[in-house]
Amino acid sequence: MRKVVIQGLAVAFALISCLSLQGCSYQVQLSQRLLIQGIGIDYEDGVYRATVQVTKVSDQEENTVSLMNGEGDSAMDALSAITLANGKKPLYSHSLVLVLGRGCAEEGLSNVMDFFIRYPESHPTVNVLMADSSAEDILSTEQEDGKYIQARDIAELAKGGKYNGETVQTEMLDVINQLRGEGSSPYLPIVMQDGESIVSSGTAVFSGDQLVADLDEQETRGLLLITGKLHNGTAVVQSPEIGKVTLELEEASTKISPQIIGEKPRFSIEVECGATIGAADMPSGKSLDSKMYEKIGELLEEQLTQNCMEAISICIEDNHSDIFNFGRRLYQSQPTYWKQHEANWREEMDQAEYDVQVEVQLRRGGQEITGLQSDVNA
Image (cartoon, rainbow, N blue to C red):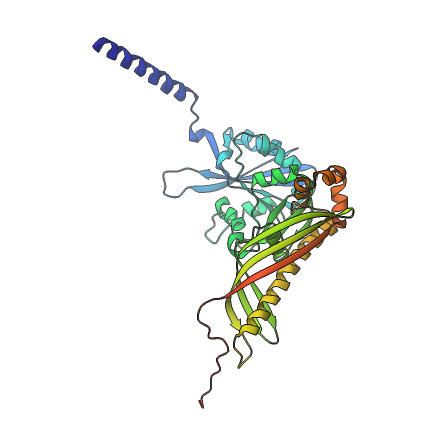
């Protein structure tokens, strides 16, 4: 029995030794890798230019970031040029953000995205953004201390839509799905330099893979409402009766029902949204009452409805861009119609009817002190 146990331990030890030796023989040291934190791709005059933020690992508490550039006939060629210049293998799995320059977006997303779809280390949750000018400018923005704004901080801008309701967040997988969806098109958050900082500045709209329009913050809010991605935000309504009231928007839910009426599709878009009064600057001597609350709710519903209709007008009617996935809903609920009109959906989508109904559940927040009037003689 003892002999069997000893033999078993010997075999186990041999297997562990073999596996350990095998791992060591193929291990790539960090010093042989480029730890890429962020990638920027620009296009001008037939040439692609790649800019990458590379993390320099050191014994210090804080790792530093440097920039590297390369040029080529394609995005992959430009990224390969960076490797040729330093002899290290890039590690893309750590990348947090991909920034595309405006020229690159105008040339078309497919040429750039194909590399990231095929490359095995590319992560599907990488945040994709568009620079208002060049991607290199964004990744090379320096702060007051002379250090670059890091890719992780740039990625946080896109996530800010959860709080401000005026910024979209788009990941690599979202872009791929929109490019390959039933008549759909992608959209990207736009970022721009503002002195020593980077700020959001709307939404880039594509038709197919071509950049066709920009949405401002209010139109972006309409996009978020229609797609059911509005979580928070603020809105201001005003009129002579109520003055100026600032509201905090809450989680919105959206239901879209496609129908075929005659020969045309009709989309009923029902949005329900909560709102809380955050501040009220009312005319002197007035305070909020039930009629005031009703008026505030009506004004907010009108404003949010207008945001939605403006987004539809710019995207669908003016630029034949279905960033709302209306075509996919037709494909799912009206397959016969979709089969007949799929090939011409981009030309026909502006002939459909879009009916938007927004319902706001208004709640008052905090202690009501508005409308109080100071009177020294009281």
